[in-house]
Image 1 (cartoon, rainbow, N blue to C red):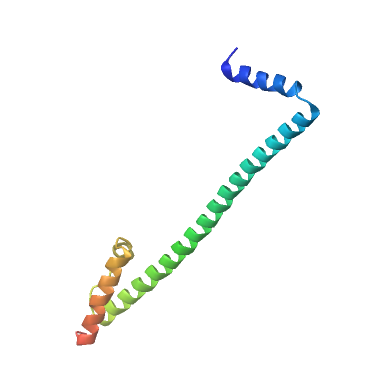
Image 2: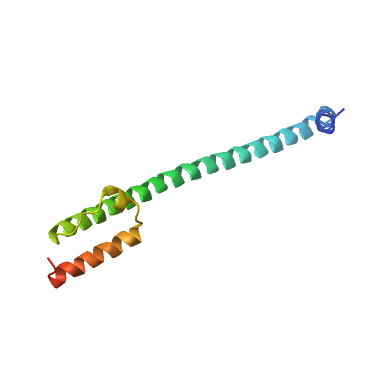
Length: 114
């Protein structure tokens, strides 16, 4: 008989041999163990849901920031009569690069390069 089934059968035999008080204590421990496992599973699930919602929030905020930066860059490029970047060119840049590009364009406007 495989070890796992043997162990399970031995536990059942031990349970049958217990007094009603021991059986009640055993069942209470088993219930507490299952309740704790359920709490852990629920906590993990809630944590994942909260993390997912927060990730979406952060992603939305970054998307809005990216859109604003790209719009400002395009406007300044037009005002300065520079070649206008394509959506693909701007999409290839990270936020730091977009911020840097915007700062350079703002400096050109401040100097009166238009």
